[in-house]
Image (cartoon, rainbow, N blue to C red; front, side, top):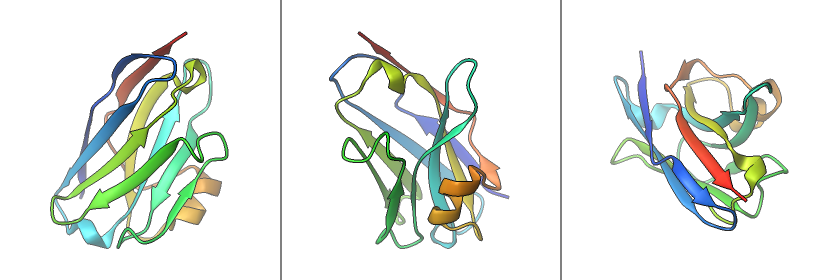
Length: 126
């Protein structure tokens, strides 16, 4: 079992930045692929970004590529999502996810993972 706790969400103006963190516990963090997903009111959950176990490879949704950066610190059992040039369309609840088998490329397609955090709200005002 893996427990995930997100933090760092909030209210920001368009063009601003936020950095989300996700702290993991319960199992060996470096054994897990990690991803970020989001869900806006009335919309389906969508993939945002994912990273492999070592942090050497990343995958992004087209809508955030070039603006968002996913990274991880295996020594601190934490994955990050740096969000720059935020747009009102980025407003959503952001979820951290982990899976020991589903690779980042598959996360992007399946929009799924085994373990999920409780989510953190990101609101971007225009």
